[in-house]
Length: 271
Image (cartoon, rainbow, N blue to C red; front, top):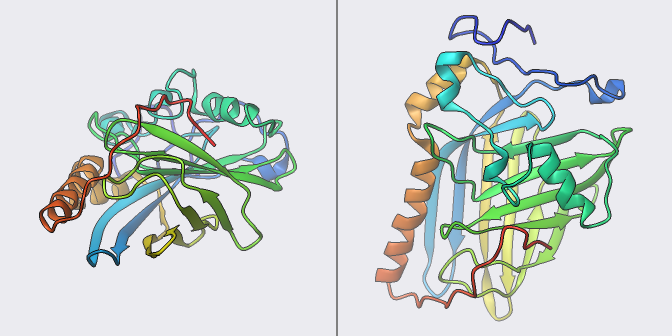
């Protein structure tokens, strides 16, 4: 990707990815960021059938080489360590490495690719942030799924997917007010390529599964592409949060009982 001086260039040019340090191996050369216009779909089958469908866009970025935009567009995409994990690390990479160290994992500087919403016009809400983690030689080591709820809490799951990208983990975090903290997640999280297709299914004893999918197509992360997506989805992360609350009100009015929320979780809570 051509680079230009920070803050320079036209609004239609490429989004710059700074290179704070030299890669360890050729496999770890900075990968250009990408944008994924996508559709999020939630399907609830019991005790009432309900479908949420929402269109938005996500960023795919190398955690060591986060996107840098022309100065005038920077309010449209910002990635801050305070929005993830404990919120106290100096960088996003340090935050992830600290989480992995707590589980005995050292990537030795290996590449990490993150799929997430950016902070847009001062607001961010990431229901699910994914980190595909590789070792120094470029081999996959693990995936971290970081979940945020609408109560300002966050929780991270450490996953070891199969070669097909599937993984399972016990649910250990309060997300929806209509589900207790029980059951298991069955996930399919292949690394994004030209197409994005993620599936998270919540299985609970005696209940039909709740299924969430994210599907989309890769776009180069140019400033012009970002402008188009911003115009199409203004205040994108605020819209995600509002859609979740709106559908929650609809479910409540349809008679779904609210499940009590456990005591407040600290950002360090993780499995």
